[in-house]
Length: 595
Image (cartoon, rainbow, N blue to C red; front, side, top):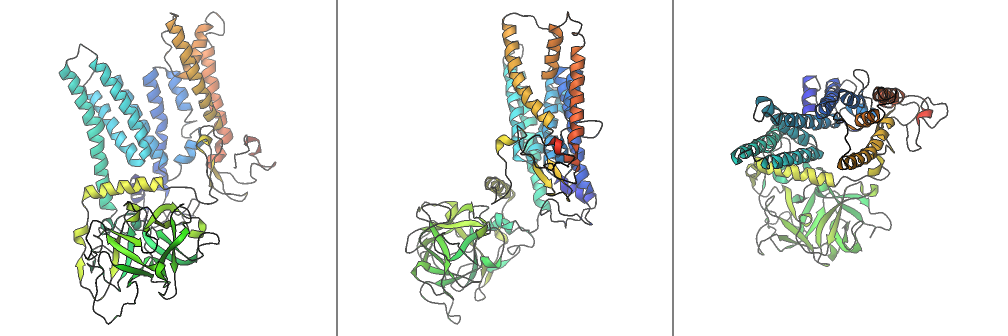
């Protein structure tokens, strides 16, 4: 929403599709959105500086922290941060709110000696606002919520143990934190979602991720302000939608399953988008419906046949194993012009209904039981390979337990012989919209898997900077941008983690043994280590200079490393780094770096 607002205010008309990185913007106005993301990304530097300064009260420590994020006045020294912040991405916005929440938490902690003062309330409230922002950008914002939550629990525990405070005062502290860190973020988050729902009220290519009732509220959707026949009848043309969110519509197309994947018959899948290949004709299992005959309704327990409208093949199953899910049966399209065999017969059942009841469009939750094998039609939710157009697998499961994967409803319903009813009554409440949207996001995120031959990285690659990500360009004539963290900064982080654990252990032992350490030893890691060296060498001529020289050396090393690797973020052209004549050849320190 923030990116959209920036685009709206800067003249973007909303027509660019953002299909893949590297597409030309042509006449579209995009600078406002890129500038907005870069603006928020640039705030990480002062946020980091102020956070460390407040925690350590050490100017060199705060300066060094800021230097790890910036060089000169406006350039990120970490090429990874720079690359992410200069494009239209969620990452700089997410980092902005996370760092803002961290700074606000540190600030209200520093006001602990002035509880309930104006600054204390300001920083506590700003922490809650930042938490709502972080969670509103990505669910990974939950980690900063966890950080603030643990800090709050620790804070309240110490207050509870302070016998100079009355229980009433402790209760006030608890109430203030509940209001500012729980109620305020939730109210903001829900309010932002309410605006989101009001603004995004039009149909789009992602409608199929949502339930039929949700789609009925979207302008331009076939269900919006629509009137359709209420009860399913033989001869009707229908679409069948899976009740599990982000599964989509029962679908078929003229492509066959490849050799060695069950029977080489027509593929049946689920597809998340509206399509003519989602249309099926409901027929009696043993005869064709006479167009001139009276209307006959489909009832719970009837045995039916579903004929695919585009290809005239019947929905079919048999004892061949499904493509991806073991012990499930394959589902195919079979027959010619609706003529197949007994493996095309399905018993339609309405969940929790008695035999003989009519099937209601949209409202009835139905299951399709294969007559020969006794299995239930469903979708595993697994993504088929490229031969299946990366649509979702449909199977017939012998396990009869009712799950959302094997329950369907009739969505579109065309039958000119039947009267129509309005679908306005189906539109969901805001609470239902909020819940469904989040369930779709969670299931959609869980379903994200790399496609065939798609570039992937392992979780351990990123902490050690083993492999980067190509943002654009693949050869020596393209303008290439490569997402790779500044290796000097990233590897210094790894060394810092090890040194932190070692130094923390040594200092803890020293304190336990009664060794008197300098009182000013309260900075962050490198500042602390250099001060410790200066203290240990106080009698040496180097003692007074080692801290300043160490800090200056780290600053210069950070600046120089940015100078070396900045072309990765700003763009390269010419021979690839693996070529000896490339100006970047000497910087390919690892074979896995492909810039």
